[in-house]
Image (cartoon, rainbow over all chains, first blue to last red):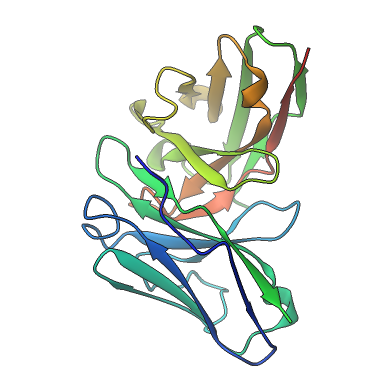
Amino acid sequence: QSALTQPASVSGSPGQSITISCTGTSSDVGSYNLVSWYQQHPGKAPKLMIYEVSKRPSGVSNRFSGSKSGNTASLTISGLQAEDEADYYCCSYAGSSTFGVFGGGTKLTVL
Amino acid sequence: EVQLVQSGAEVKKPGESLKISCKGSGYSFTSYWIGWVRQMPGKGLEWMGIIYPGDSDTRYSPSFQGQVTISADKSISTAYLQWSSLKASDTAMYYCARPLIGYYDAFDIWGQGTMVTVSS
């Protein structure tokens, strides 16, 4: 099971919007609407930001949104804030034998 | 409060065995899957495997199948990750995480992580 493909880094200025892509295959992202996104600050455990492609857990800002088209899922952060600077990981269900696979991670820099 | 509390940091030598733990509290331990995630120093998250403590149904990522063993003791609400013979390349932070009920991938509760260092 190969890791999902994410850009290594993205950047944006405060107030702008950015989008992080997550490309998988027809065996994972393309087959299931079970894509989640995590935010990880240095030295901290990951935090769930989006699940089931576009749902937000309670307490997560509505500046975070998710979508999917074919084998590619996307996380969009609008109104960038300094505290959004972190690493972001996508994750997809990959079938009943393996269950899950993460993306390689994307470092978001807020300029 | 729902939480997962992991055992403390470990320093081991190559070839040694190790079992780290993850204790759940504040929820029905047998009703949720528990997953294990590896993060090597400076690297990304890797899905290792997942267990359903209710019936011990366990699934492994192909990369970790045969390399580790995931288990759970529902009588004490604790999941485990174990190695029979550690390698230097096992040096990493290991997280346990609980997904939302009915999900396998949406980990909303995370342990604090257990740092495992393997060095001669």
